[in-house]
Amino acid sequence: MILSFQTRLILFCIGTFALIVATLSAVSYQLLARQLDLDASATLADLTTGLHGYLKFDGGRPSLVFDRRDADQASFLHDATEYYQVYNADTGELLVQSDGLDPLGVHYTPGEVHAFLDKPAPFDLQTAYGRFRFTNSMIAPESGGRYLVQVGAPMDPVDAALSRYLGLLLSRVLPLTLIALVGVWWMARTAVAPLRELAADARRVSIRTLEHRLAVRGSGDELDEVGTAFNETLGRLQRAVDDMKQFSSALAHELRTPLAALRGELELSLIKPMTDEDWRTNTASQVEEIDKLTRLVNQLLTLARAEAGEIRLAREPVDLGCLASATADAIEPIAQAKGLGLECRVDGEVKVAGDREWLERLIINLLDNALKYTEANGHVRVTVNQVGDTARLVVSDTGIGIPADAVPHVFERFFRGDPSRSSSIEGAGLGLTLVKWIADRHAGQVNVTSVMGHGSTFTVTLPILAAADIKHS
Image 1 (cartoon, rainbow, N blue to C red):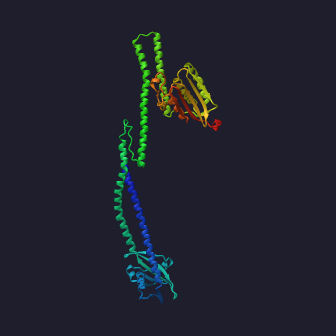
Image 2: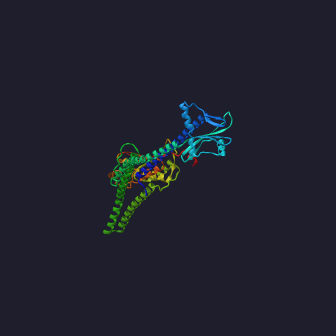
Image 3: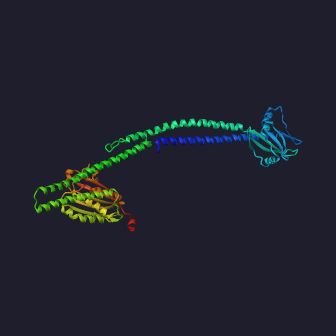
């Protein structure tokens, strides 16, 4: 089962909070236990050191010598001797033991006494009356002999303090966790609420309401970024759908004319007696219409493959000037047949890296467009030169020009400008779309300027081939 984002957020926050509280509790408990233990050891060490100053040995027997009128001394010795005993270090004999140790059963053999002398470290002893800590120290008085002095103190206050602290932690952690759970739940709902609103707003978007945009709060936070990104995606989707609608409409228009002509000619051939010459004429007209449909389909397939990235372009040195000159020479008879002048001027060697065949198609499409929209006695000029580190191909004409509001759309599929001005001109309106695709694939750009009644100028800029690349090639 996949948990909701809000549930996962709550569980994560509570888990993190519980981990932090548990870690802090454990660390604080350990620090307190260590500090209390150090304090107890330090106090016991002070009692042991102070007791040495009051112990006197006479004839091998220990006694306490102090001013009984001094309340501080009396109080100190009371604490130091509440749990203490003295052994003869040589024989292991117990010389004196406080009354407090009698019920504890603390009595050691000579071997154990000698072991304490070898390792005189403090030790803890668990008894029926609780845990006790003892220090081991040796006294060697000037009168002779060696004596083991053990001073003890109960550790119950330390253990009781730790137990109370542990109980306090346990009694506070659960309520704090519950409070945190409620707080995190409220915060999670508050944090997720804008996401729910965005989701509800996004559900209102359909193919018919692509102009709808999500409301952003203007706070500039991550939620606003999500809303803005979604709105930008909607904008791109809306433009794509609008392009598809325009494409479908234009395609239907382009197909309707030749299909209507074919249908009309076929119906005419069925209802009207025709001679052999009429059949040949009619068939030739039908073949011409079929050729138009074939060219249109081929252009569509080529453009579809190009936009889908299925066409791989070669990358080789291409002399753009020589290519433009050769293409212009091949098209010049068509220009002459229409009564147009065609001129090509190349300013030195201009080499680019690209696909020769596709660059040739780019030039052909630009020249074809210029010839179509230039009336008789007009002029078409092709110029190739190098400007800085770019190659520039310019195709200009003295044709009918392009309306200012149509200039931004000339590279769109099926765009034909003013129908009243271009209805008699053949073509599907895909040539310039292919020109732009070729320029883009060669890391170049294509731009157009036009003045109504004075012609148009198409400028293609491509990266120049570096001298090192030319030498290498």
